[in-house]
Length: 430
Ligand SMILES: Nc1ncnc2c1ncn2[C@@H]1O[C@H](COP(=O)(O)OP(=O)(O)OP(=O)(O)O)[C@@H](O)[C@H]1O
Image (cartoon, helix red, strand yellow):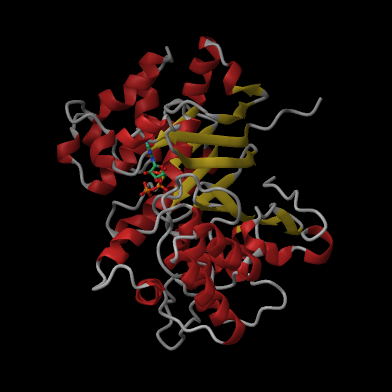
């Protein structure tokens, strides 16, 4: 019989409910959903080291806290050696907690300031009833290169440097000889000079301990040290997944391209072309359909027959979508006018506030007619007018497809649009 994978993350979802405001309560509206992790899937086999990379707020920490059971799962599941977390009993949880260990970002907070190094390292052994504790603690201190162990056993965190603290935290995660290490930005708070040595040591230890690792970071440049495979995450979803070296050489998703192009190049004579992203990620609230990167994407796809500059196109798309979500403070703009009843002035003021680029020809005429509809109070017509001319295929959820063997990318650029999108809109995230 083939062994079950070590850890299968299967359509994992963690949505938080935003607390209701008075308006929601009065309208009896359901609270908004914060889609922090939204359908994440990947499999960790023994000896794998897989990275999850993304900007602040993309859901990395929520993913990790959900994986260790500190957040309830709101959809999908985590399957450990064939047993779904949703059906864990207390014995399963005990086994899981002993075999899946975490290294947190901040070594200053992850160690108890009152405990000596020896006590910190012994505690997990005591909780899980493991014998030979003195020997085990000394061995782990050797392994994390705190030598000789006697020098460190009686020290408290305040008497350790940042790098030494993180080595103790790594030792504490390894002391039970776990199957899986979840490492959340494990070197981001260390001096740059210490980062590489701690990462190299961690990678060596994962191999020596025959463990697997999920390495979480915002920093794509450190990933090639430590992980053979990388998952790129954007607003709760994985947008690209591939072998690290290949992904760094030839990123396919425009978001990954932008992250890779931002990695500093050590050669001062070489200036890598930059892929610019506009703006910042939205809050992950009620994100709806479509590619979540589309409002920042330098390659967002306009309708086939539309000749339009990318930046101008993104502005129109972002404007229409904000109008659809009823997010635009239009009353405030109207009230700021000398004559709030002057529709032409109102349309011009909206244009002025939301558009920095100029459209031309039929595109400009369509936008003008939509702004005139808004000025007349008819938002529905404005939305329809803009949608009819400017709707993008990127507003339909891109399924994660295999761009090449073992290379998944969730971007419409990799579809045969004629066959798959126009005939069949039932594209979903895998
Ligand atoms: N307990 C919570 N309740 C409500 N929203 C939350 C909670 N925890 C996280 N979020 C929201 O979920 C989204 C993802 O947050 P998360 O901390 O997982 O991102 P991250 O990628 O780890 O960012 P960072 O690197 O800054 O920690 C954010 O919008 C955050 O505000």
